[in-house]
Length: 293
Image (cartoon, rainbow, N blue to C red; front, side):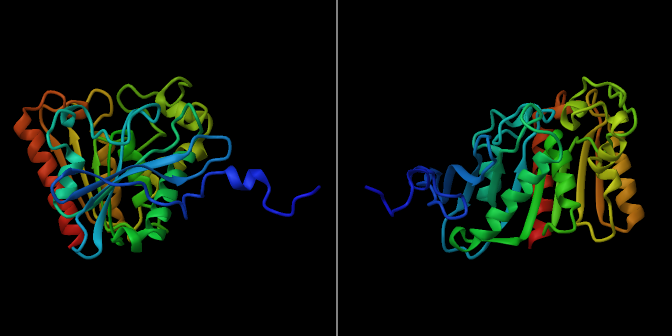
């Protein structure tokens, strides 16, 4: 006896993220809802791509969006981690951005042990596409989007903001690499063991076209959204010349950029007093508010 109904494979597969129901929201703070582990994309043979979404209470009208991109040398990291010096904040930094009136999405992306560049950038584009698709039910306005990233996440956020096809009204970039083609600090483009090489799948010097494509300094253009670049002057992992070079390129292209260098700060704001870390966060949040007003 044959069946004319749907085959089991079609029935048992999880709904596609484009149409899947949203998970129940938690309410970790007055006036905020948190949707954790929302699938936004599928990768054949890979894990589902998920994001967390902080949403201010309904009724405020379409909300501006902050898309946060975590760091971790493209090799590790958690989507809800804004770095060493914010981990013990209560409320946490993402919750604080939400309390300021933003929808906040923090998205997973494929790490270098899972896929090679441009896979992580493609994933973030997919996240923005999903947010745009589901914007009416989420109550967000993706035409007012600021991308915010730290370290390797700042590198990806820079590339995302510089993509002419992406609607971004601003970019907040903390201590991020901007150039994968020339030696800077401990980075050697000829080495096949650096985080940059693991991201690209080969020593950057051996794949120069790919290294250039993965370098924000080569992607600047006049229509780029305004950038806020903040970098520690004593950064021993990603030298401040990365942000200086990106700022110079944006200025030369006629794009808006603010560069803030921080004396006494190593990578991840290590070495700074708590009050200064707080000031950098508040300044970054103010920049995002001004870009989405």
